[in-house]
Image (cartoon, rainbow, N blue to C red; front, side, top):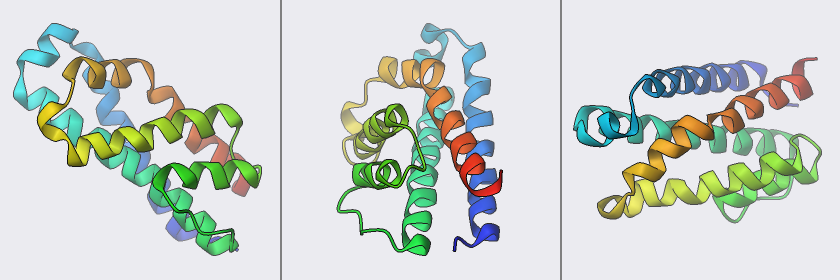
Length: 139
């Protein structure tokens, strides 16, 4: 059984990160790219949001005693296998897990335009993830 307090704490933290990232949408891509405070904090909050999504998945996998993931991308595969998230989220969040590695390890070559695009177009996947997790465990 999943520890509901731990799960809700992480879901709320993810919502907090998403809220910050949503506020970035008021900037144009040009404004975003030119301001190191905007893009720097955005990159960090995007990293934290992805990390939180992975952590939520790992927590569920551990508590439910599903097979152990070998990679961060695998976390979403396992959640899909166990009918917790949709195939679309499995694919999209798996891609985000891979992008997390770029944010963390290949930060010298981060494509700021790509980060802006993720923030403006792909946050819906993290929002859907929270909804699907809540629906599975609380509805």
